[in-house]
Amino acid sequence: MVKDSLKFERLREEMVKRQIEARGVTDSRVLKAFRRVPRHLFVSEALMDQAYGDFPLPIGEQQTISQPYIVSEMTQALQLTEDDRVLEIGTGSGFQTAIIAEIAYRVYTIERILPILQRTRKLFDKLRYHNIVTRYSDGTNGWPDESPFDAIIVTAGAPEIPQTLVDQLAVGGRMVLPVGTQHSQELIRIHRDEKGVYKESLGGCRFVKLIGEHGWSE
Image (cartoon, rainbow, N blue to C red):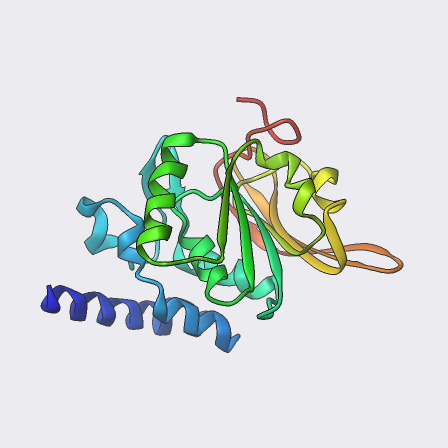
C-alpha cells in the first residue's frame, strides 16, 4: 500500500507539472488542490493506473471524468476564493467537486444519475469533504433555495446558456460552462455585475450532453 501511495503521488506531481502548469495554469490554489486530491480514487480500480493521464476516462452510465487540464482550466476560470459558495451542475465522478471543495467555502453539487451520485457521495464521506452538499435532481434548474452563488460551474455541454442558472448568480459572480452542439462546444465564462451580464470565450472543448429541462432532451 505504501508503494502504491508513493506511485500515485509521483504520478500526481507529474500530472500537475506536465499537463497543468506547462499549459499555463498559474493559480496557486488550483495547483495546490490538484496536488492534494487523489484522482485515482475517482475512477474504477481497473482504471486507477490511467487516472493521471492526459485524457478523460469512463465512469459508467455513458459519463466520463474530464481530462485533468480541462478541470484545472475551468477551476482557474472561476477565480475562486475561500469564502465562495459554489454551485456545480453535474457531480459525475466527484473529482471536479473535490478540487473546488479544496478551495471554496462550500460546494452545492447536483447529479441527475442516481447510481453515480450514490457512489460519489460515499467517496466524499470517505475523503471527509464535509463542505460538499449533494442533490439528486435536474441540474439545469439549479438550486434556487440556496442561491445566489458566487460561482457556478456546469460540467456538461449545453445548447445555450440556461437563464435559470444566470438568475442564480450573485452580483460579482462567475459562471463557466461549455456551450455548443452535441459534439463540440466553446468554454464560456460569464461575469455578472451591477450593470449586467458579460460573457467571453475561453476556447473549444468537448463534453457529454447537459440533459434536462433547460438543456438537451434525452
